[in-house]
Image 1 (cartoon, chains in turn yellow, green):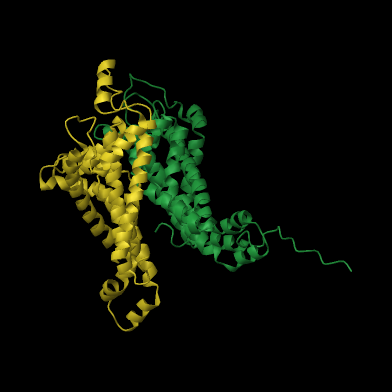
Image 2: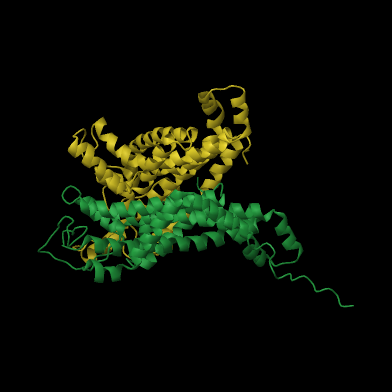
Length: 305
Length: 302
């Protein structure tokens, strides 16, 4: 297993390198630049700014320069927030997004797994149709409708919590629900499908014949195999959740990473785009590695290869 | 004595799954009332949206861009069945025109992702070996690219041109399709009838496109049905960012976004587009689930 992990980590290096290269040339080929929108700046000022950030050098030289900085772990300055580096911005905003993401993940796992298990155990009854209809709604309502709806009901009409902000523990509830709803719905469907597949198999019938109770069959026998689809989904899902959601952060006014990611792309904030891409990609890769390890642990038929 | 005529090698013997499979599938789909309901809703909504210009001219009586600033936003009434927006435009007309764009984006982007994904996955799975490894590594790399940033940069390239916009969406949505098709091709490649085709000396391209791909229709159809709602949600997300279709055009995503901003004052501006979109996504998902059961597809998305 150590060899497996080591090899996967080594494979990550070329992947990140290629991603950085693709990102670099893609954003440079896109029209506009970080200072193009600053109308009041005169030509000389803009030329000075370009020179200051090295944007006046030949493209390939810039590429080499940025690669060297990246190798040293330096993501560079932010063009939009000139006094801060990209490393600082990520270090400051990531904990916020990660906290929100973790809370949303808990919401998603608790709701999703409960709904999925109920539906699989009571297939074709009310306890199947009702949670699965809710899950379908969760999949079909865009986040930016879910958020305002929850705000309208729980903050404006019931007055249980604030409409926006990120100060009190109470402020975490609505964003976590909004962000977690879609994932809860997805997990519910995956868990139901996975469990149904397992519950059909012979060893479950054997367990039942030996007189094992429903709870024991579910938790001791079925859950391990039935969770495989959920675990595969969780890899990219966790990466997406923890690195922030633009929509939820905008609606609730949360100072997280998702907003920086998106505004960077709008502003052509080159270093910030590069930093976001690499940060997210590294996250996805690590999460996928963790998932692969968990999958082997859950399913003895698989081997590390 | 004349030699017996050589068997027509060109005629694929197993190009199509036997008709009874499709009849069977149709029968199973017919039993699934929820899926049929989905099919019915999607078909009728598509028809109504497709006929939007006719309906607006003769039934509703307002066009989607006809403003009436003096009127302002009014709740649903006898003249404006679904009310008007702050510019006094008829919500029903905008809903129908918006549906045209949303459905078109959904279908076209899915079609693009289908073509790329199927060909890419099929070639990768069929070729195997080094080619497969390189092609799949590229998919892995693209998977790690944050989708939002990628789409924003693409819209910068393509401007606000809606056709190119959904080509762009389709071009990033094909990754999962490619993976599914690759897995299926690798499984089918091992089967006897492919070995037979190879033994008969058929060319590789012919084996792939005439003998393997037809057997993948089931998973492809199912996955396509489930991709359409995803793309429509993505369109809504891009509208939220302000990267969707531009005024005075509308899409369900744009309408929902505008409605969500004024939901306290004029709730009907959010309700109707949101219901239309949720109903469509609901129906497509039910249809997709039904097709999955009917075609007995395993191991696709969930």
